[in-house]
Amino acid sequence: MPGAPQCCCVPFFFFFLLVWWWPNFCLGGDPYVFFDWTVSYITAAPLGTKQEVIGINGQFPGPILNVTTNWNVVINVKNDLDEPLLLTWNGIQHRKNSWQDGVSGTNCPIPTGWNWTYQFQVKDQIGSFFYFPSQNYQRAAGGYGGIIISNRDVIPLPFLMPDGDITLFIGDWYTKNHKKQRKDIENGKDLGVPDGILINGFGPYHYDAAVVPEGIAYQTINVEPGKTYRLRVHNVGTSTSLNFRIQNHNLLLVETEGSYTVQQNYTNMDIHVGQSYSFLVTMDQNASSDYYIVASPQFVNSSDWDKAKGVGILHYSNSLGPASGPLPDPPNVLDTYFSMNQARSIRWNVSAGAARPNPQGSFKYGEITVTDVYVILNRPAELIDGKWRTTLNGISYLPPATPLKLAQQFNISGVYKLDFPYRLMKRPAKLDTSVINGSYKAFMEIIFQNNDTNVQSYHLDGYAFFVVGMDFGVWTENSRGTYNKWDGVARSTTQVFPGAWTAILVYLDNPGIWNLRSENLNSWYLGLEVYVNVVNPEIDQSEPLLPDNTIYCGLLSSLQKDQAQRVKFSSAASMSGAGRRVLLAFVVISVVCYLFNEVKDV
Ligand SMILES: *[C@@H]1O[C@H](CO)[C@@H](O)[C@H](O)[C@H]1NC(C)=O
Ligand SMILES: *[C@@H]1O[C@H](CO)[C@@H](O)[C@H](O)[C@H]1NC(C)=O
Ligand SMILES: *[C@@H]1O[C@H](CO)[C@@H](O)[C@H](O)[C@H]1NC(C)=O
Ligand SMILES: *[C@@H]1O[C@H](CO)[C@@H](O)[C@H](O)[C@H]1NC(C)=O
Ligand SMILES: *[C@@H]1O[C@H](CO)[C@@H](O)[C@H](O)[C@H]1NC(C)=O
Ligand SMILES: *[C@@H]1O[C@H](CO)[C@@H](O)[C@H](O)[C@H]1NC(C)=O
Ligand SMILES: *[C@@H]1O[C@H](CO)[C@@H](O)[C@H](O)[C@H]1NC(C)=O
Ligand SMILES: *[C@@H]1O[C@H](CO)[C@@H](O)[C@H](O)[C@H]1NC(C)=O
Ligand SMILES: *[C@@H]1O[C@H](CO)[C@@H](O)[C@H](O)[C@H]1NC(C)=O
Image 1 (cartoon, rainbow, N blue to C red):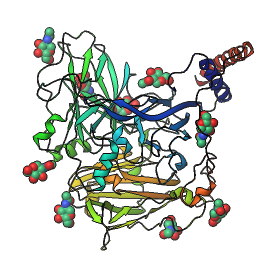
Image 2: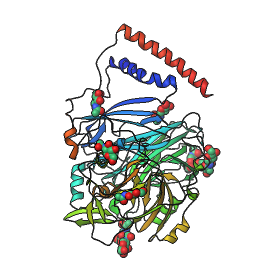
Image 3: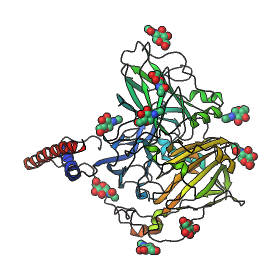
Image 4: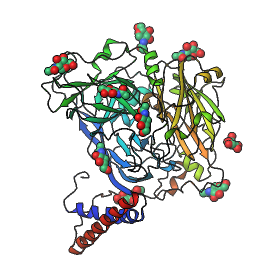
């Protein structure tokens, strides 16, 4: 029903949009955009086998949230799944507003059949991000979609405006549904080789009859010769690091997770789970055929993984025929050294302006004194109290029934402890709700030490952090000598190679309770996460109050009122003649305001 508006409610919808927009528009405030999203199972067969996937308004992947810096986003999310739901916005900083973060530590999940309205401002951000369902292993079934935050007109892009903007989701995929997958994970079973790698929800192009069966739908990207496109590529998979490449085409890296990078050409790029990159790709080939777009697993050495390759098609309008022959080669798939060097080569463009007119590099992170140091070590899953769990510094995160943020707001003690250890302690591993006590405006150094055998990706909500170093072996104080103190890129998701460490610096200027997690779903699901509590000690008026649509659960369940059954998103009211005249007046006034604002900006 949603997604297919009836003709009569369309003008009605615009009417409302204008009523909401108009005051902001004319007074020069930040615009509001409104969306109604219904999250439900839909049937799809990305790898040829029919299965339930999670769609948004019937789409898989979901719609792209395409906004501009400082816009206010209002999304009414209806949960039509058979289990609780929260959407989280990977990389969106929610300045001073962790209430909208959509993770178990900040929000009660939206029960089946209920809706909940997220409202947040994409303050001082630009770049490429994505959203996904954060609970119950649901991302393994889809439910994700892109977020594009464009720069305001007054701040130039550090490159020519591309001729097109294309979002690509790459990720490992299993035909087993997410409920069975999470059961396996709970039972300590390895996920095994994925059944495929999807590109935008599609299976591989039929590049090799021995590997890909007939009749699988694949992704085709249509392009014009000579033009340059911005490709926003996100690894939305479960746990597999992927190498992304396009046959015969350079990938000019320009942005990652909200920071403009030094522009460099790559023939391929390793993209780890949860990471997002923008590349400019120029259609400079002779179109003697179509070209392969490939996303293939890295750091795996069994021939079983051969069938797990994502393959799409880049089709020039003047192409002379289909792509054929072997796929372009990846770098040595086992070479983590190569991959680490590639990661180190990604630099911040310190002179480019991003969301604000001042250059990115005017925040000289290398000159700030570190106040808190955490060395956080993860280990492979182990049995704790008879359950398979993963740990950070020996603690496996135990999500309380009452979200941390609500417990804090209502002064309920005993829900969590601010005692997350600075280092691994010599004590048995345990399950606990232990939170990092972050001080407001502290400059924190976190060293992730990966004692597992696969790559881990760590993501911090609420912030962009500086990736200042990574190396193999065990981190020591001397490792600081190798840090990049000048143009390490600011982003929200970083990889940590097996048997290696990655160091990040983060300025804790965003009050709230923020999730620090592994993006690898299997590790995260078993407890590889922690929260960072950042409180502004000056009576924290800067943080917005509890939203009035808050859902209550756990110790606060008694505050929850029932939600009226079956919310209807689209009003079927039609417009009267008077309504149309009012609408016309709004249109005229808005156009005048728009022109006025344009003149003012010049
Ligand atoms: C995003 O919206 C802008 C207008 O605000 C439009 O020019 C652009 O094409 C849109 N991008 C995508 C990918 O839909
Ligand atoms: C649920 O949707 C209805 C209708 O759109 C809206 O009025 C209501 O505020 C929403 N509820 C919440 C908790 O966001
Ligand atoms: C950095 O950004 C500046 C300013 O937008 C741009 O002119 C320059 O080409 C960029 N430098 C590199 C190396 O990407
Ligand atoms: C990147 O490669 C393209 C050709 O694909 C070339 O035209 C361009 O100059 C290169 N840019 C840089 C910064 O190396
Ligand atoms: C097009 O380019 C390919 C490889 O770059 C080359 O082998 C082929 O001969 C070229 N075809 C034409 C018609 O120029
Ligand atoms: C590759 O295989 C070798 C020997 O079978 C094994 O020791 C090694 O751990 C494997 N590496 C990876 C990354 O799976
Ligand atoms: C929680 O405690 C603070 C002071 O410790 C007080 O100002 C606030 O009103 C309390 N909040 C509630 C909901 O009781
Ligand atoms: C948390 O850190 C602050 C200093 O930033 C300190 O005052 C407070 O006592 C700490 N809380 C706990 C429980 O350690
Ligand atoms: C994990 O730690 C153990 C004990 O310190 C060490 O022997 C092992 O090499 C480490 N493994 C990795 C992958 O870091």
